[in-house]
Length: 130
Image 1 (cartoon, rainbow, N blue to C red):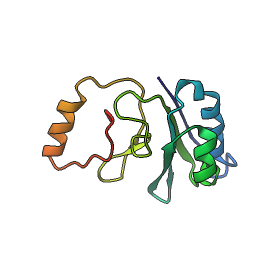
Image 2: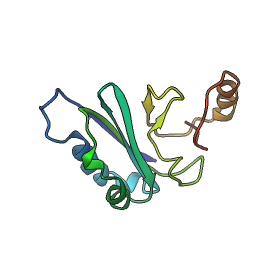
Image 3: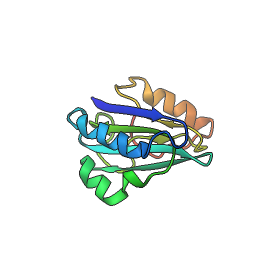
Image 4: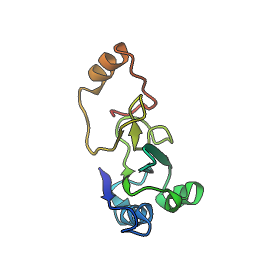
């Protein structure tokens, strides 16, 4: 299981979207307590902060509330494929750093898909099925 939340708003309409996401994730922590992460869009680039541990521990190290941006996604992870680690925490970026993704569930044929993508030149930075 995992907890997933997201928000998007017009500039200036919400005081701190990342803080809203963090608070929502705190309510969903029972759905995943191995790691946590947020991704936001700011000035046409994706900013990711993520790490192994409970939300309050990782937030203390990475300051989720200080993330800029009006579009933010967040994820709490209950590890299935890949051990709990900073690299295996969601969100994950594509190899071009233009897409951030979180998901819940198991991708059963991920090894087959991963092999095909590696053959095409894609780079993976985690041991998960994402």
